[in-house]
Image (tube, rainbow, N blue to C red; front, side):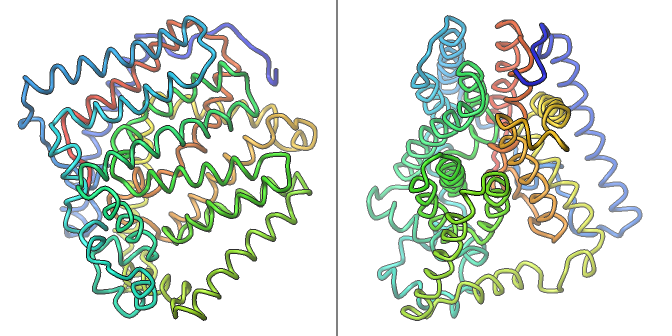
Length: 462
């Protein structure tokens, strides 16, 4: 085993409580400090949310109905406990973990009732669903997309037409908002969890893959946003792309073209995935030709769409970019907002990962660098790919932030595709720590506990 094992705890109960307290105090401090700096020194520049670092948030704990919430909460805790016990007793199948993940996403979103949990997420006035049922002719919609792009709801303005058409398709099949929200979870959670398990299992022991997959489905980002959110589907497709591209078969590698093409029709930032694939191909030269084929295939597809339907992907991206940044590059147009939102974007992504897993990810990255980094990249083939994927994804995300991407309320949801990459070094850390199951159970409980608290107290969708 790279780096070797050592008998150690992940986190003790005292450490978990201390980390939770420090995190809470830090969030409160920066809420006060940033608002003071913004109000007293910067004249209330845009970029500091009311509830930093979560831009889109509203308290809703006052609306809890105890007769509904308490049984739902108890059921969620029981399902979580059963999943942990299953792994503790040496269960070898990933199916119970996947099923638990699906059930927990449903239950935690039911804490405030069916309307708040399943209907309201698709009833927001800026969401794709406001436009989706109005689309009678999808091809005509694509052909006229650029001409009408700026008149659409906010989310549609900044995405390719596939984002709206996905919900047009789902609304046509299932009708009600609640049914569509549930279908998104029923599709995204099991496929994401299974692909993530298989990806981690490519490089680490089955027990590590199982436990890391459990942590993945317990994340606040997954528990909150994997129901009703387009970004859950996008994350699933990104995972499918990475998983297929890392397989040995050249034909399976080429199949990564399909999910990546679908992602590109939902999200302009699909280009984030290309450097990750290039990093893999750099060390596995047999992947260069499939990667070139994938890039050329996507480019050829959009040339064909432009020629037949009149939709120009690049022009549509420029319209979206100009709409987001009417004054030009944010650092020059609104420097205070640029700095505030960059800080907020990182903090929000970290908060929805949980501080416990942030620390574990840092530990894992350090271990990977010691064992795989530098000149050791050529020799440590087993862990080279997890290290390369995590490092390239991290650098790519930093580059997106530096370019001014993500303005407000976006990273935990809009950059949800980052979480599988952030969990790669966590898997590396777990692989190196021969922790007791008490420690593993405590960590899982801390992660899920934060998810429950966040679901109980607030609303995060817009």
